[in-house]
Image 1: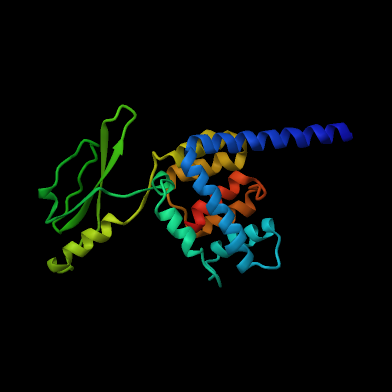
Image 2: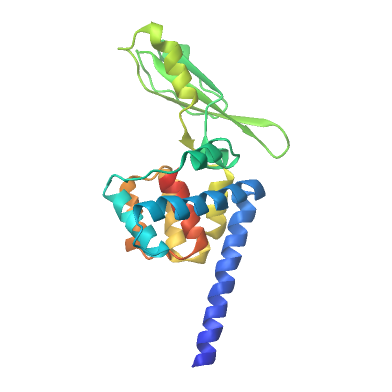
Length: 234
């Protein structure tokens, strides 16, 4: 019986190591290093300050439930960690930002672009954004988004609206973070379901944080912790 237990522990350790190695490799060397730093800061600063009486795993569990219930935290993510994320390549593996933004007077000024997304008729001004992707062969691909009717906004404020839109993140469905989630989704039923949810939803509602607790996520697993930090802290 003891031999079986030892073999089981060894197998689980190997599986977790293989899972983390694959996740980090697909995410990318530099982004993975940045994420390791952010997780360490999250555990050693944020969790310890907000849950000083809890062990790390229990603190993760309580954090997730507090996020689900939209509770306020006494201490936030450190400024140093936020700056590190904001200036890192990891940021662009998780999110995408438009490289161009326009405000069109109405849909007659628009056209179907290379992404072949159809245009909905609008008689009011709206925001159109373009996202640029560099492909493996060095060429570029573009996608577009449209929305945000602004018929009640003074035209004098258009410049500030465009400036704000250029800084507005969207979930990067083709970034290496999503690719890493796809690569490891077969390691557990939870990861499989989580990947399916991310694929269909992109950004997660805070209520989804509770699923990590109720749907059997291993909160001691390093990859699960990395996912939690990216999804609910940054």
